[in-house]
Length: 331
Image (cartoon, rainbow, N blue to C red; front, side, top):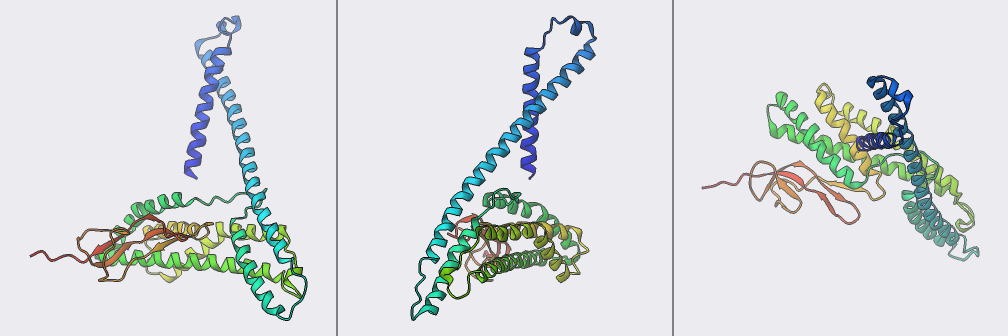
């Protein structure tokens, strides 16, 4: 969001600069009326006209940009609608009852459920306000920033009460693990609820005779998206606070929780979900291709400091985790 605002600000400055240049060339410097006024008045008039011209250009640019984005989203939706229509044609192509009708319906519903889940996961209705869901590479940056800022601040704060860096690190990791688990469960429950609602509309005498209304599908997805922006984040955050009453008084820990919930929630609702790997058990071999070391050196894991981040689909590593090894005894 901050990046978008920065780009808009830079664009605004650029358009004002263009306005200044254009106004300088089209202004009649030999105009008697313009020459008769003071230098300060000339400057004020020049700047005011240039700014107005720049604003007009910026508004025009933003309008054209919005129209282009809407057109692009519409094209994406048209492709997905075509896929959904093909699915609907497939499930209405078998009207003749057979002796194994119930078994066939069950298999058909399972296949339909799988394909429909994929379609719903990517569908974004045209004309519906777009909910900003960062791409994986952006969440990767957010996750690294969380560790660098909120995690570091919370660690220093907790050390004042626990008097132990190791214990504070373990507490912060457990907090993140609970948040990640809650976000995944919440997201799965939402998907299951949407699927059950949709599947209820195709149950009956014959699954193949039921047609799923496309607008109903889009409305169902839109409802889940709206819930994901504020309600889910608030519920998960409050749940974490309730489970840790002794830590809520630490405002730096609370900031760590709030940002962790937001990032984990956005990870869980990606069209291609992301996952966190909280690492191996104590005394397990350290895998340097997935985890880096914290302070000590060694080949065996003592405890995990920070989880690794992957794409769920192909286990593509997005960012390495951090572990504290068991210190090697040097004789």
